[in-house]
Length: 323
Image (cartoon, rainbow, N blue to C red):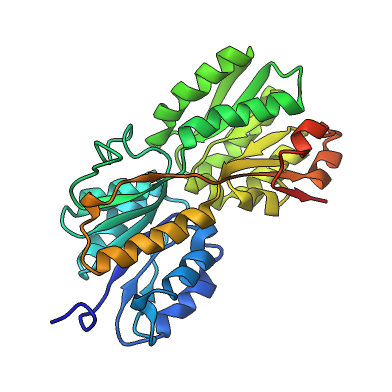
């Protein structure tokens, strides 16, 4: 049976669920099934891109969604469950999801829509030749952690103490901390880590963070934390703590400053990989590509509430300014 006639199943595994109802409506569009779970940031973009490919023309794809809902331990259940359908392709967002998918199958193609570091976390051995059944796109989160600290130093020149809210259950943390500590040493900044492993630990970590009174906060790139972004932003704002965040969704709920890869672009590129693989390309032959487009988002309303004023040099670098 030719590729155009066989059923297509795609599983997209990610952590945040708040924007999924819109995408879930695509699940009813046709007789074939495309089992999906997307990251919060990429839902609209991935649908728009895939609907422009041959796969979705004629309304022949059905999407199904699975959500970890802030519980990374669920990936070890969700991935095998979706593999058992069986599926034709898995699209992931974040390190825990990618690791779970890799553990669950060595044969079904896996496309990482966005991951911090695929090599140092052991998902692939080489970006140029990932081999096996997995490929995708890196958001360069390791390098970005140091860049975020530099931006905080530009905003607060006297900065000397920074707290970091991070998910210790995410394998990316140990790798990213090496880069962040190196940047902190260069900038003359001390760094205190406030760790969580589950969603129900976030309140306690935020309380300890506010009580510690660092001069600023770095929120780690993590889908579990992203799922609780409103709670995190509100607590840090109430505690009068300036913070920098990794995803634009934080700015939408009042976050002060965002610096990260443009995930919309990454997931559009991931959709093209999905198309190529479902047409016969081998994922191991497609290089893991790194992000090339990044964004700085400044929230002036949040700055006013914190009694801060962004310097012109930093404002001039912003891709988006929220008045």
